[in-house]
Length: 255
Image 1 (cartoon, helix red, strand yellow):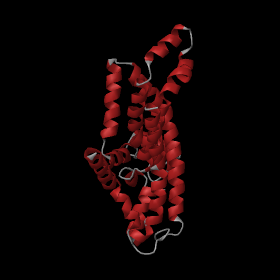
Image 2 (cartoon, rainbow, N blue to C red):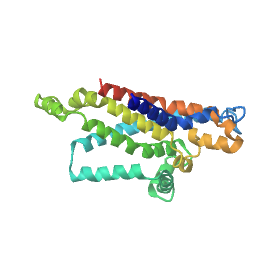
Image 3 (spheres, one colour):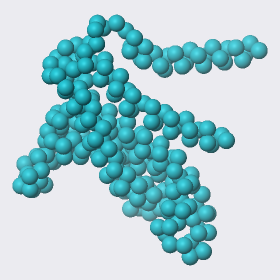
């Protein structure tokens, strides 16, 4: 009985410690203000983050899913080289990523000059915003998606292949259903990583301002009182989805 009580007390203490930063939402900072110096800037930032992050995640899924499947199903030297590249993208410090992207997409480099010649700005633009989000999140998606594919029994794929089912149908009818919860978790992780990116975005795409950059701008313009409303929306757009997916996946594993 004593052990049971101690376990619950330890659990409660851990929960309070982990969630302690959220108590900051109830700290008095004065009357909340919706925007900083420019009216409407916070609402515009919400639109920018939600729309452009959605676009970036479409690219991440379309490109990252085949890469994750390849890494999960092959152990060739080429796969090891690809895995090393994925890990580098994950380990890259955000500030370094932003600086490097601003250099390789600048007019100093052939790619940057070509993009500008066809009317695609490579800094402080929608394109720069989306490209930065893709680079910031795709490695996380690939690693988590690879784990999901690795947990899908390969024997069922082999049986389906022996029955003469085409590879793409095997993926949609066998592999994807088995890995769907893990892929959903990978997508939610990439979503949080992309929408919350600040260090790289602030260098490559300060404009159009997404929520992280706008939070920083509001803080500089008018202090904490102008941060709080946008902060609440920022948390509501980042935390619930991955939390629900992870919780559902865990319940499904133990069902």
